[in-house]
Image (cartoon, rainbow, N blue to C red; front, side, top):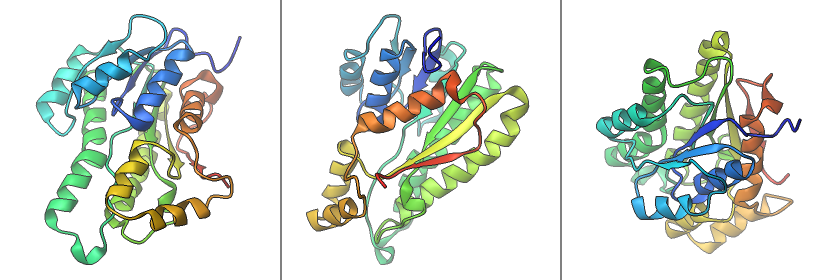
Length: 244
């Protein structure tokens, strides 16, 4: 039996309308998982849905910054074997320009949303004890910060530490909790970063990666490992994916 096989597993992927969330949903479906995708943009969510392999998948639009949307999403979910939290924004802003609105926006999307979703998943008993894996997408920037990344990096640092505590709390139920910390990869997140900076900054980011910029598939393949039984003895970790 292939340890990376996801047949028989039901996986929720947030932020699945684009970027890493979209590719994760696609890759996990190719490994046999039943996929439930959610995101704010219904049109792009349907585009992702059309790219999934296999059958019996679901697309449930939701804005996870809204408590009612979280409640409605959780109510519609079956019991899950895994959750991939791919919700966040990437904005570059020097410290002297950070305002209260920036803090609210970044933490609301990147930290509050996944934390409050998890709260409801636990309360409504939507996570299968003994066979469930939760995976948070962090960032290599926690270890290798960049100028202007105060908000983005702070959100990811908070998320990683929350995940470590969650791993301890859920270990008795044998629910695994891990993070991956990728460097920037080609795709929507890099494009979003480019909008608030310049090409020179992107070139500097790429120069720090000996193997160059990665692809979304490189990250998704690692996520499949964490969702699969191949990682059944792994919890409370954060794996750096940085191209060297």
